[in-house]
Image: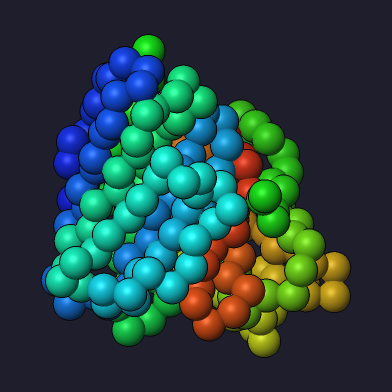
Length: 112
Length: 111
């Protein structure tokens, strides 16, 4: 257990529905990252926050994706109008003063 | 897009043997990190090597970095069944430490 938690751990939804995932980083970690990982592949960067500011977004992050970190603590990732291609593991990581990223267990999304 | 490529894609060895995995990347980096992922679970940080370092050790792990060849290797000595996992290299190009990942090496340790 790295101290980063994600909720829910699993989500099954129908195409077209909206889903929201939550990440609680290690307390006082100011950087928070979201990644997406599909089967047999490494994670792909989606976006990251320093405190409450979203500093970078990947081109992978279409307009259907939005992320927030309103108080610089927990973060949410919302996917609107889900598509089957959104099925993946969504990983959150937090960073404190160093460079090591501490990952949560991930949220596995299945879009039917 | 993925920066790194791990080699081999899969590796199966007997318990007690050494396992070597390689990673190649495309652009200049600030540091390179190795992570382990057990089946369907989150990633665990193993070791970080900076661009000005050539070799680093941590317990049974040894990492080398050759920036001229844009490659790194991870050696696990005296492998154990618990080392069975996927191993990923990830590179950080600049100070925002966004990590760019390879596709991983799946390591199986046979008892």
